[in-house]
Length: 598
Image (tube, rainbow, N blue to C red; front, side, top):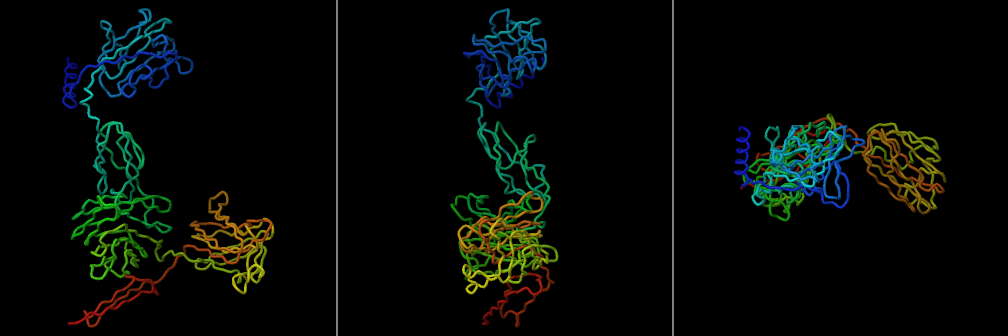
C-alpha cells in the first residue's frame, strides 16, 4: 500500500512538472538477416530499440570461453545454458523512466523458461506478464539442464511523457557559492539538451595566490576549451589551484596585455559606477598563473564595447590598478592622442609626463607592486592596456648587457683554447678549438678588405674539415650575434647550444653566407654552452665579430629628488621618469613651465 501511494505521488509530481504521464510500449526483437552474438556493449539498435533511450547489454557466463546471448536469423534472440554462470541480457531505461511490466513471446513453450530479476530479486509472471516497476530488469536462462531460452518478441510497458510537453532545454549555471574568490562568474546559459558547450577561459574570477584550473560539477572536472555534452541542468563551480610562483619570482620579463577590443575577452555594456576585475594568464618561469587588473568607473567613468566593431569607449574618470615594479612600462593605445592640448590628461601614478600620442608609454622608477592609471578625456577609446615587468632583484635590477663584445683583435693567437672574462657578470669562459684557430692580426684582404672595414682584421677561422668552437657554460644567455664570412657560396659557421640537463646539442642556426653576414638569435637559457661548427667541411669558415648578451645584476644606491618653485605658484616642474627614490646616477629630465601672473 505504501509503495502504491509513493508511486502515485511520483506520477503526480511528474505530471505537474512536465505534463501528462502515460503508459507506452516498445517491442524488442531481432530482425537481422545473419546469425551472430551480442557484443557486450549497448545492442539496443540491433534489437529494434532507440539506443539513446534504452540500453540492452548482453553478458556471458565465462569471460574466456562462453558465448554472449545469440541473435538468430530465424527472428529470435537466445539465452544459452551454462553451468559456469548466467548468460544474461540487462535492459535499462536511459531516461530513467519507470518500466511497468514486460511480456514475451517464445519460439515454443519448450524454450520459454526465462528467469527475470529486478534489483537482484526474481520476478514471477502473472498471466504472462512480469511486473517490473523499476528502470531496469535482467533476463536469464532459468533451466537446470542444457536448453536455450529463445525469445521472439519482448514488449516493454513503461511510463512516458508526452513528447510535445517535454522541455528540450537545459540551464548551465556557473556558480561561486562556497568558493573563496573575487569577481563575477560567467553568465548562465540556456542550451539544448544533448548539445555541446565549450568550457570558457577564466577572465573574471580571481583568488589571491591561486589560479583557476578547471570547473567541476561535483563529480567531473573540466578544463578551459574542453567540450562537454549537456544532458540536463548543470551547475559548475570553479576549481582554484595554489600557485608555486608569483610575479615577483620571474627570471625573465613578463608582458601582461589586457585586450579591450569588442569580441576579444570582455564585454562591457555601459559599465558605470562599478568596480570589477579583469583576469589574464601570465607565464612565470614556465608556469601559468592568473593575474588581475582592478577597475573603477566612478566619477564619470565608463567602459563600453558592446555592439561595437572595434575600440572600447573609456570615459574620463575610469581608473585602472595594474601590477607594477621598479622599471615597469605601461603602454596603452587610444583612438585620440593622450595628453592632447585642451584636454584633461590621463595620468599614470598621478603623472602626465609622457609624449602626446595615440600610444602612451610610461616607465616607472617606483618600487610599488601596483600603479594607478586614471583616464582623462583625452583618449576617448582604448584598444589595449599592456604592462611589461622587467626582472627585479632585491638590491638591484637584472638588465640585458653585452657580456662579450669582441672583434678578436684583443685575443691571443691560439689553436687550442682561449679564456675570456665576461663584462658585467665576471664569468670565466673557455673557448675550445677543434681544427680551428684564432689570430688577432690575421687578414685576408683579397676577400675581406680590412682597410675598408677594420673588423676584418683578426678572426676565428676553421680548417677545411670538420671543425668546432665550443664554449664552457654561461650562467645565462639572452641572445647572441655573430658576423661570419665565407670566400664562396654556402659556407660559414653554424651554431648549436646545450643547456644544463640537455642530452644533446640543439640547432640554433645553419644559415650560410656567400660573403659576410650577421646572425642574431634569441637564446633565453640558463647554464648554457655554445658550439659553432663548419657548415662546409671542404672550405674555411670565418668569424669576425661576436656579441653575447645576458641578464646581469645592476646595483646602485638609492637617492631622492625634490623640486620647488620660487615664488610658490609661479610655475611647475615636471620630473621624468617620476619616482619616490632613484638609483644613484639615474638620469632624469626636469621640465620647467612658467605660469602667467595677472
